[in-house]
Image (cartoon, rainbow, N blue to C red; front, side):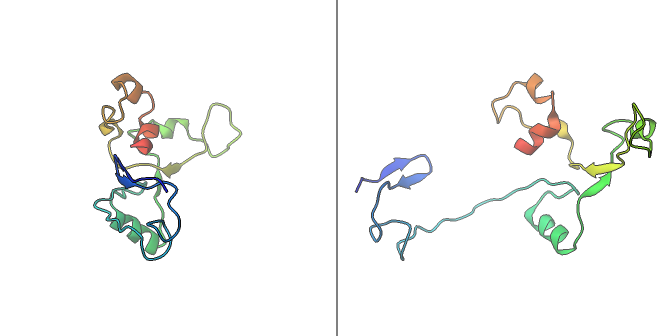
Length: 123
């Protein structure tokens, strides 16, 4: 049996036999979830909004926002038409993607601006 170590996220025990503070039995260490956040398409920005979206049977699909690109000039219903898109919508985040906190993830500002939608999912 190894001694507990005081780690970043609390006290850790390695190689502890069952019944000696391990994960089985009644010796489980209680945890507390002190905060939760989420960002999903459909302007879902909280766990309760996610729950309501799921319970209602809806999804977050929406037409492509005009702020992303000019879909009207690129759209054509024939998907085989060269140089055109037949996509009318998708699952877009409602928040301004420029609000991504690059410094929190130790990223340079120019890296964060390269693909802000992908970085927002990281956030």
